[in-house]
Image (cartoon, rainbow, N blue to C red; front, side, top):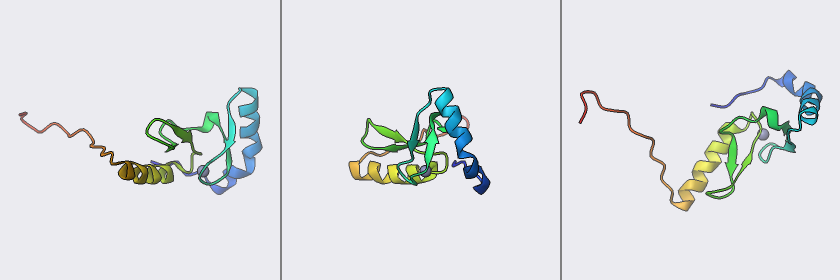
Length: 92
Ligand SMILES: [Zn+2]
């Protein structure tokens, strides 16, 4: 699930920058939208795959887009991700 930031939130980016600066988080442009964001804002599954073993963090707004692009990369690589099936009722 993507966490959409409201429009006004981007006006206070300097506060986020200050926080990142003070607490030694990274401050980098998002590879998808180009907006700069800090390591403290990064959400665990918000990453764009560069290869099967490498990924790059994307901003809180681009999580869904990163997942969409990752699924295209995985398809090209022939990797099939099968979610674990729910246990059937009654077992067996
Ligand atoms: Zn972004």
